Length: 579
Ligand code: ME8
Image (tube, rainbow, N blue to C red; front, side, top):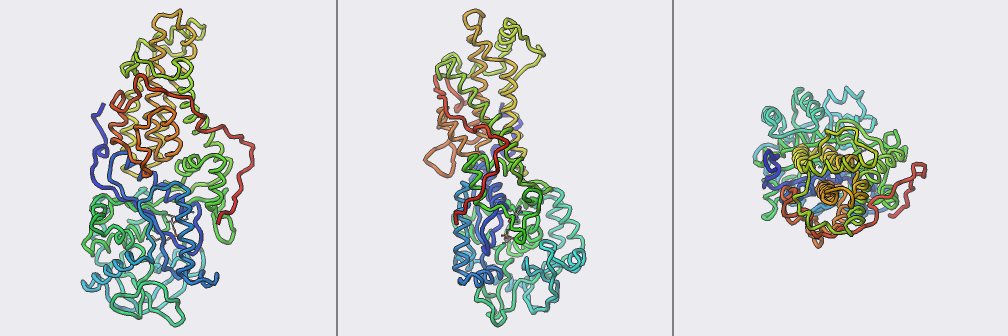
């Protein structure tokens, strides 16, 4: 059963996953929660695999728009940044994210090291002083190339607002020196850019050639005292984007965390900021003598009820609305919907109430939740809630004779099966699903991973419909071997669902913990550890009839339904402002 395993199964390399650090000019919304959720699910899944994981998120505070909004709100930049950083922290706690740290770029631990990296680049000649004239996008605080500016009619490709022609004396990073090195990294996937549509865009733009990029801003009169000064020149500040990128390294550039940078690094973000992460940052790292990230993953955007979210439309889906959905349908249902229906691939995704309810009912109430309570209820009804002693794993499917007995019972009841040749091998099915799950994780393909987990539930549902244990249960006294067959079938369903629950747990940690508690599978994870650590790596935990399987004599109590069915006509929940 353990042959042909994905390389991930025994991967001992530390795993480091990051989200963008978010601007603190405003409060968090669905987009910020989404990227951080994908990182959370990936981090939890890698911990489940047994890897040493570090998951980082945080806030990007030294942007001009932060000091501007602060002034509009009669606050100092730092006060305003703190108000919003606290909102991000609260939102991420509410979403049950398992980040190992939350970095604020106003912290000394970040500022000191970011400054030291810039100093190293200056000393090495990778950063030099020069004049710069270019198209500046004030809304994004970035310069665009002539080609990109022209393509967008000299408007911001993100906000559509006009670009400004600016001339500045600046310090520049010699990005142009790294073109061929970068091309090599992408050609052999030393740095993998995902999804592939995004990689093609980056390669296309890279072919147009790289220019040196500004890494500082001249301080003007009247500027807020906000940001980190250039280490050798007080009249310049480090450009906020360059400083922000450094957070990924500054936070783990300590004796006990350095192993994460030397391990496997995954940067997650939306497509708007891919260029910085795929081109500028790896080149800076190379110049600093550090290894580049293994994966740069850029997802697409959430839109709201068919419309792009924007400040002017005031249609941002904020954390308060997600909280209202969580209140009504459970937090894990919100996590499930966002993870499985989100814009992980190349296309944007719509947050629409009708779709939410449809997915909630189809995937959770009628599938995962229903299957788990059905099997629990049958174990309760037919075996008084205890897995029978005769069922010590060896009755797990394949066990052709039990299926034959089930067919016989259906025949006796006048409801013969349509396909008498159908076979079920849940042991093999779960083992293959676990492998597929591991492979999907290698590509940060969380949607496929979770669908694979749910495919186990679908197979169990099909197995129950086909073998009809409720019909078999009525013939315990009249049909030879009926008891053995019933035990075997229900054991197999419970064991397959136990394995499914493991694979689903990164997306729905609370609901799966609830199942483990009613099914007495607490040994799967240590409930005292909030960081969801497991007692063994996935490949051991998910072993059919292995050391962590459902055991003879294990009591499976009848718990509350994990997900109640939702009324499709119910109105959408409304946000209740919490902050
Ligand atoms: O760009 N759909 O910060 P930011 C999905 N500080 N994700 C979305 C989204 C949407 N509609 N809107 C935003 C910055 N996001 C810089 C980053 S990193 C060194 C510096 C998510 O607050 C997505 O992850 O504008 C996107 O990349 C990020 O928020 C931008 O956050």
